[in-house]
Length: 127
Image 1 (tube, one colour):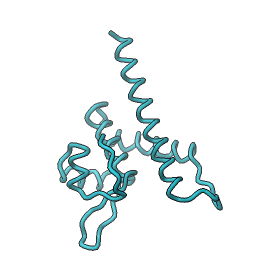
Image 2: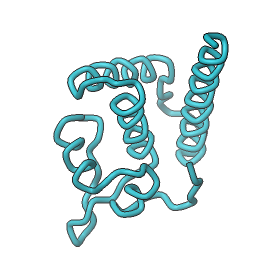
Image 3: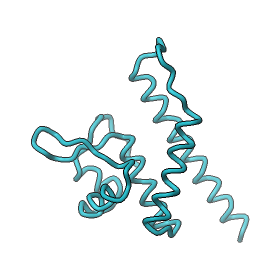
């Protein structure tokens, strides 16, 4: 995925990044509680990097791994709950909020890459 420096992304940008149509994103918002973009002053959806990560995971679950919407919803909820348990937020921390967000984003990226590499290895071992 292309790395962008912005903090919030319009629906068109997210559609290009995720290679899905806007109506697909709007539908997923109705099915996946973890996907809840904010609205700009003009009422346009704006997505955070966290939401883009969720979108990419939903796409992977549905299109690559073959989950149904209901199955993907359950799997995503379990994964997000596991991450929350693994990555507790420290209160009264002296670490700036921006660093926490960057650190969380980096951990998610590393976790996703590790999972993808394991899947590739499993495919190679199977051949």
